[in-house]
Image (cartoon, rainbow, N blue to C red; front, side, top):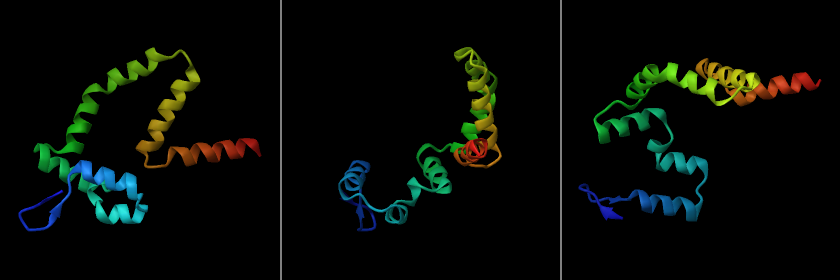
Length: 113
C-alpha cells in the first residue's frame, strides 16, 4: 500500500488480492469497492487508460479476423456432431443476449416432463 498524489491510500493489486482472500467480502461490498473489476464499462475504461487501446473494439476486430479459423478448430477438434451443435447453439444464445445455462436447463426440464 502507498499514498497516491491526492494523499489517499492506493492499494496494489497484490494487496487487494490478499484482502479479498482473507476478508472474503460480500459481492455487494466487492462491487462497491472495486467497480472496475465488475462492470464492463469500467473494465473497458481501465484497459483504455493502461494500454491506450479500446479493449472491446480491438477484441471484436480480432474475433472477426479469426472467426473462420475458430470455426475450423471446432470442426477439427471433434467428430461429435452433438458437441459441435452445442458449441454453436451456446454461441448463438450468448450472441442473442440470453443466458445459455438457463435456456439449456429449461430445455432439460421440459424434456424430463
